Image (cartoon, rainbow, N blue to C red; front, side, top):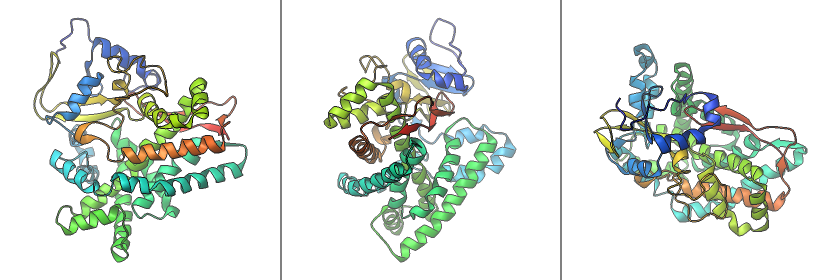
Length: 408
């Protein structure tokens, strides 16, 4: 792979825990010296400039169905074993053909209207209050990640899909297994993902049948009507329900947990927010920009694409680092400073263009309700003394916050 730069290619271990801990310094070096970087480890190109990533998300030559290409790189026996997972993933919105993505996006826009999202506010508030009541009754310290950040959005998306909250623990287990699909490929992890995807689809088959017997105005009803119009198949509905159960809470859980950690790490910003609740919308936007809520998204080139002087050839993987784009000094003044008064924010945490996240308004609402309620009821919330957050590495160059002990 030829490089357009004259200096020797930069070499980083993009899969190690140490690199994930220091991801932003790596992104800064790549952006400054090699913004279109060939990674032998990933067998793909890594993009770190905001402008390049925004262009890539708009460019029809970079398609959002690259996971098939990833599967094809596995050994033949693994490909055979993982065929059911590949078939399911190929039906996911955002991972199918461009036309398929737009078809599902247009369907879900029937549900994710501004009015529908805002109408969810009372239910989000009620779930938040219930979770905080339970945390307060427990006394002592709690784990904000497992007891608040994950249960809130997972309860909301479960209700939107007609899933009983009594089954929520299964959804969380399945979702943990699904993360392997979006990170570095390990066959054993993918086999666990496959098992969970199949279990989720079978589970949703029963939920969908129950919905047909007793319909309600939720996402399933949008899918059922679309099926009657010949726009989707039953298997597409089930596969995308599995995706929604995962994607519908993962981003918000990260936003809440990493956002809380950002506030703890920047006490002067935390004090501003406690003193002025009107800053909450801006604070949530800054958390989205700063907190590496979404690390990488992947694309596959279906024709040669030029980024500056570098030509990326057909059928190559491209890794778009949203976390790097959100710290690009060409777009954000003092990008490594956490500032809840920053405005406007051109972050790409929710993607861009036709691949802008349909659930963005819902995630923002959930985070705003959560932080407003938490700071109103427990303004002195603080991390437990002499404890550290627990992290899980998610290659490439990303970490998941798994535990954050706090005292209310």
